[in-house]
Amino acid sequence: MRGEIVIAGIGNTRYGRHPDRDTVSLNVEACRHALADAAVDKDAVDAVFVKTPSSAREFMYGQKVSEALGLQPRIAGAWDQGGAANITLLTFAAMAIMAGQCEIALVCYADNPKTGSAAHFARPRGNDAAYGWFSTAAGYAMIHRNHVDQFGTAPDAFAAVAMACRRNGAANPQAQLRAPLTLDAYMASPFVVEPLRRDDCCLISDGGAAVVVMSARRAREMGVAAPVPILGFGHGQVSWDLQARSSLTRLPAVEAAAHDAFAMAGLSTRQIDVAQIYDCFTITVLATLEAYGFCAHGESGRFVRDGALEIGGALPVNTAGGLLSETGMPGMQLILEGVRQMRGTAATQVRGAKHCLVTNQGGTMHTHSSLILGA
Image (cartoon, rainbow, N blue to C red; front, side, top):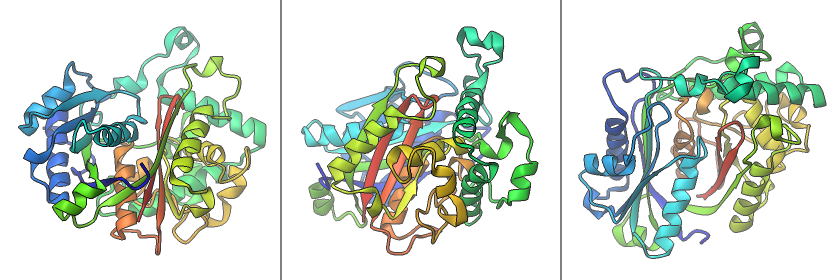
């Protein structure tokens, strides 16, 4: 399948606050922009793949979005895999196209926890809530603490991730948070769940984003101006929650996804020019770098020093700001920025970039999906 499927169009809403909007209308707006970007009429779309919103789950949500779009697709449905779902849905679309089950697919996601409900992220975690385990942040705080205890990872390593994302977000006119971050400001930021500081944690955001997916052949026939080929993808998951895992810093779900994506693409990590790495928390980026093999297990703290993640560094990361600065709406925005980098149209463009890695993450490192794009 390498290079046989392309992302033909991308689109998004404004990110931040949408107090007067529901998730369906945000999805519709993002899809409209993506279709316009691809110069594709909506009536040509015969598949709609939607990530379910975390803030308010709805029955038959894929059909509801399709109806609002004015479509009668051959395939439509919603999927939940946490933040890993967007790449997964894109690969479902690719496989359906290759199997002849559809020709042009919309893949979209919208949510409104900023002005709706963020209770999903703050909920108690089973019986362990009696001991203080509340919220998504608490689980990642355990992983963060474990990394520090095992490897002596210093605060400046976590700060390096946050500072790189915030610097890129400050240069992105679409970013929700356009404020660069210094090491002193990071160290002064309050703890949310110790050892996680405020600036280790992603944003809470309303918004929507979408992509148009089709075969490379169909894109040529339709004269799509800037299709971006999908070179590889992969998936992985771990079913056990944190307290049942043998290790909190080794990530079998990430390793499985990475292996399959790079094998399909026929590439190595040395050939990745830019990466959009899921950054719900700074520890997620450090652990992901290790699991993908950009550095050895436990060595990410050293790897990210001296500007390695910055534009011009060894591995520029989250060039639009990621979840830490562009929008906390998880996952799809990273795909959009990967497309922009491969087109050469990003606000903070990595010069000469030919290969982009995009990662999505769900739960507390439960699910993982990988995508490799080419120029």
